[in-house]
Amino acid sequence: MPLIPVAVAASKAIRNATDDEPHQAQPLMAQATRKASVVERLCAGSNMSHWSEQHLDRMIKTNSVFQEHQDQLRRCWTDANNYGDVAAVAKVSRKKSWTGEAQHGR
Image (spheres, rainbow, N blue to C red):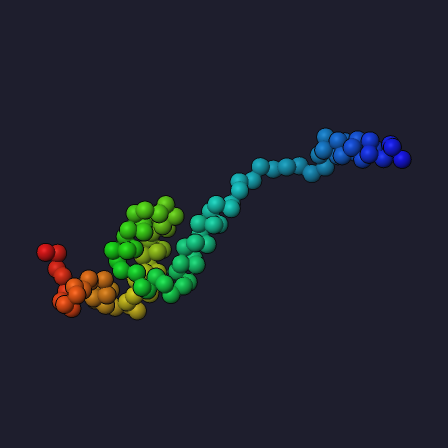
């Protein structure tokens, strides 16, 4: 009975020392997958339609994942906000003052 732990330890040591299958170094893709999924979830959701163009630019400027995928994010934002009409995007992204008048870079 006292030889069982010694036999188990020896068998584990032998198994770890000999390699049955060749290990090929493959790059880990977790980080790239995580970054892509962040962008996909953001584009799939409806919350991007609530962002102004200024907010989108700020997010791209401060977030490294957004910087890497900025073309895709801009396409998603445009699709979410204008439904194919460029003039509608300009209208949505204009800031309104509390009086309701549009502010033009004063």
